[in-house]
Length: 309
Image (cartoon, rainbow, N blue to C red; front, side):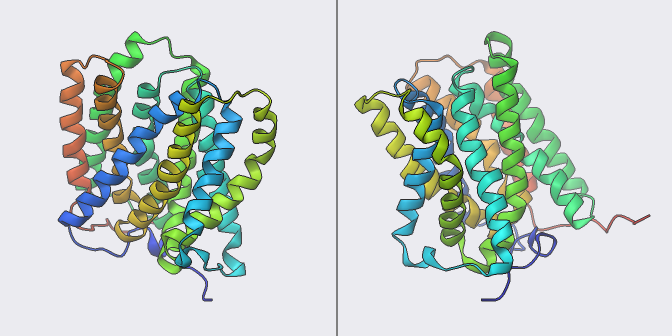
């Protein structure tokens, strides 16, 4: 099979125009699934160790996607280094770090911190293409970041979040941003399901030792077991396929605006499920973040290349 294009060739995606209704639906569905994942992690942690959660979720995700025939396409040998890199950086590392982080900080704060992904992604994409983001994208990213800061401020101000937990989430989001620039060219060649299957397979192998050790630190309780099954099949397998499909079609920068909506989902779940309160500043932040996402979603525009020294 022909080798996938480079990240520089595919970073902008295959869809050149503004978002269509179907694109917004794709983004909303993906954001809802990802936003709920932090709740499922919190429930799973009641009786399962972080290592067990990380391993089981990627294993179940790989198993669910393997049921689709289109997922079993074998990548070209020349692309396996990218599959392995994305499997470690974008699958195994976040799966483990998010579970470890939620032992130290709340699930809602974890979800809010994930919204830094578009910022890291845009910076990496600019470096890969050697092109500065357009003024429209700069404004959109700035507003998105400001909105996320407002969303996060009450939780950061009022929680006892440990520096280690926050650092784990930031590390995981950087891993997501790096992997997003690897996913796009692979998706455009092999399809989202195949990319998910093979990267999750790599992650399953990497996290197997953590799962074995974590099994001895875990106990069987139905709520936690059901939560990790949902997290693996839907929150990992299906969600990753939707996310990678978005990266391939919309590009890494525009596709990453999904991360702007994840905190909103986390807030809604916090109010409805956990009886948390929402401050006015968070509602303002949500509106600003959505508007920033809209600006980023505008037609594909790329600034002139950066002059090389």
